[in-house]
Image (tube, rainbow, N blue to C red; front, side, top):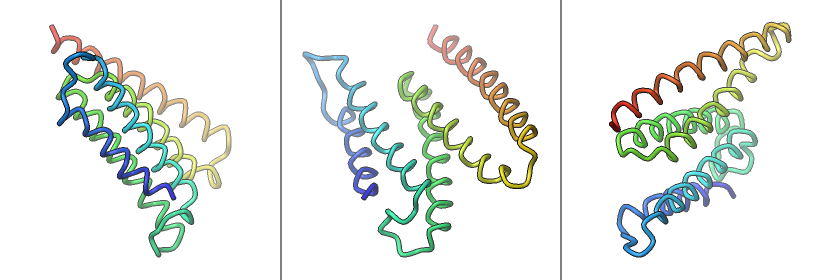
Length: 145
């Protein structure tokens, strides 16, 4: 069940916070990426198919819960990565935030919007996200100087 990977991913992500590698200084990035990736993939699996969950809620409720959890965790990952100066965390979290957002947009609008309008909205959101990421990068590079 994917929920095992949620806790495991968080544990692997936290390893470099407590364990310092003196010989391999670049290895904490691997821990952080592996932890985040397993966490986000587990959330993705649960927001797509809620019947894999241990929760006894209806599948639709489980899927909505994990959509909110995924968007919240990815937003927190971007914020935390900027605060700590971990660009791999920022980029990975921003990528999964975008994926979770597109899934949410698809579920909201695919059935009642004309498909050309849906693709227009998705394109507009993509342009807005690229603009925001460009501004975010300028702020983080400026802050690093």
